[in-house]
Length: 52
Ligand SMILES: [Zn+2]
Image 1 (cartoon, rainbow, N blue to C red):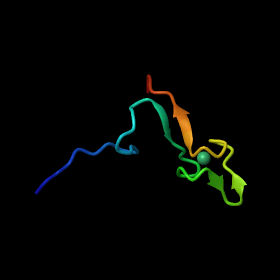
Image 2: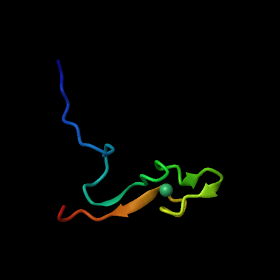
Image 3: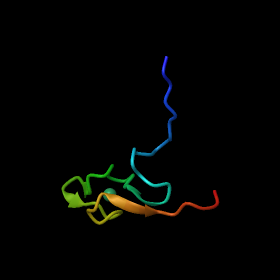
Image 4: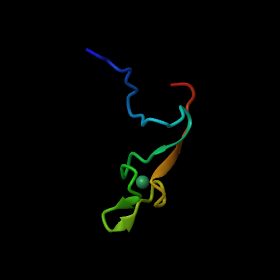
C-alpha cells in the first residue's frame, strides 16, 4: 500500500504561498455566464500564507 502525502486544497506544483486556484470558481475564471469577480477571470487568486 502506497500512501502519498496529501496536502489539503493544494494542487501539485503550486507553491505554498502566492497564487492559488480560485475557490469561488474552481479555477475556471467564470461564474455562470459572468466572469468570476473573485479572480477577475484569471482562475487564480492570491493567497496570503501567514498566521492562521
Ligand atoms: Zn474565480
